[in-house]
Amino acid sequence: MNEIRYVAATGALGVGVDAEALEQSLDLRPHFIAADAGTTDAGPFALGSGSAAFPREAVKRDLARVLVATRKANIPALIGSAGTAGGDPHVDWVLDIAREIAEENHLSLRTAVIRSEQNRDYLLGLYREGRVRALDPAPEIDETVFSRSARIVGMMGVEPLQAALDAGADFVLAGRCSDPALFAALPTLRGLPPGLAWHAGKVTECGTMACEGPRGGVITATVREHEVILRPVGEGLRCTAQSIAAHSLYENAHPYLHKECSGILDLTHSKYTAIDDVSVRITDSGFIPSSDYTVKLEGAELVGYQSIMIGGIRDPFILRRLDQWVAEVRAYIYGAVARILKLNPPDWSLTVHVYGRNAVMGAMEPNASEMPHEVGIVVEATAATQELATKAAQLARQPFLHHGAPEWTSGTTSFACLHNPAHIDRGAVYRFNLNHVAVPRTKMEMFRTEFVQLGARPL
Amino acid sequence: MKLAELASLIRSKNAGPFVLTFDIVFPDDESYLRAKESGALTIARFAELFRCEEKHVLFFECDNARAFKFSIPRPIVQGNLGDGDMHGGQQFIPLMDIEIR
Image (cartoon, rainbow over all chains, first blue to last red; front, side, top):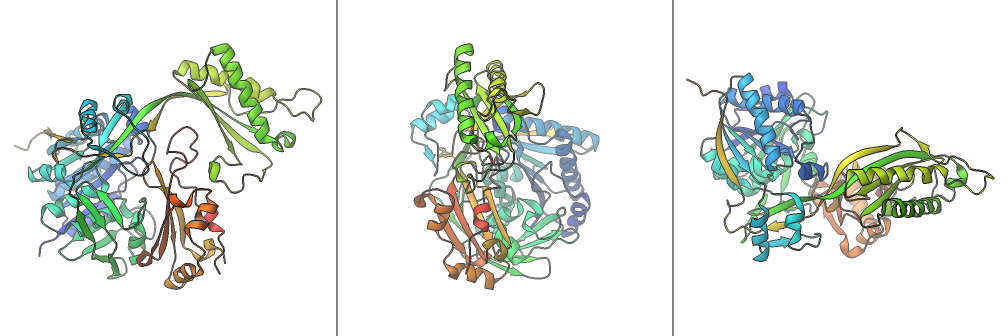
């Protein structure tokens, strides 16, 4: 029977790989072990700055467990969206960690390194040919978006991964990658139906988050012609028809249609059936091939540099007219920064978050008129350089401290600063600037693969 | 009965940096159908609760997951200046108090 069995080692490389469960999962005789290592969920900083969201030690611990297990079983390991954002510095960072692991554990790894960071001029060329299309909702862009970006990555589908597996890679280290593609690559390469293969990938890419029960453990999938079987390995973990169905909705705007490079995963008719206490069968998932091959772009650009100040207000006379009080303080600070630093918006900005009020939900907060007995305030000064942002934050302190309530006859100190110095320099701040797809001329041209040997070759 | 008492899971989350998505999941068919047939969960109600335009709200009734899903464009793009919820995880609270008859 044609089937592919695999293990998803963790939902995010760096969060933890359950060593015992991973060892136990080898009893399934998996054809590969894979783990996603990236996300935009932490925000634009990783992509913009070229750094990772997890410490090196945590990624090394998890990756070592995956690489040692796959060498033991003589099967390939796949890691996607390396180093959080999957740009070239992120891939290089994980490659360096993998080299260290190979040497320390005497592993020989024929490694396919697949890069997905995009050349700005190449993208500009696609844009001018009408080969960059907006998703909904998307920021307005023009030609300058490419040169403004600190970094842009393209999200690969299964094709570059399959080429690497076909070429006999022990370890596929991929830049930015569709999470389910990492798991769908081998099953679809072996001719299994794409609907089931992609659906299995969609459920397993978050690790055991699709299961009920405690955290930890690993999740395994068996992809066959007419079904996928999902089964967790780990004490107390169970897949239920509902946990798998509910996870299929997770983190997507549409519950049933999931856009990938080569088509749309269609879960409209998917059926979920419990086959024992911990395992679930999926059937009837479809895949609608697209006429155009599209690659999702993710870009981040520098907003500026930031300095922040944290404090609180307890005085009920201020709290009962807080909005007005904040507006007066802000106006005063903008004036002072204009006079002293000769700086005006949009060259700098002051953002005020009022915790206890509406800092979490902003304009969507339904209870903004309810005033608590104290509020926490975070003030963000953002400017073109750190020096200017720091000076603006320094100029913000006195106005917050000494804008009292008119009910008091003499000056009070109206703002409880948390720190000295009151400001904290945050460094560079980035923003996401693309929600677009590219339509490359060929499926492979946006991704570059090179083979490297990690660890000594066996004699 | 309030939705939070009837549902087994109410959550919000980023669906990429530009979209917020809300899932409401029920423990059994009875509670799911009760919520569905109550007519309390609609695009109009959601738009009112979250102060957004109805035309921007996507709404799905997912029978096989015993779940409802709403999706809206993020009012502030994830991580832009002013965004107070990087992961979009704490936006579901107004759904909790919806009265289901």
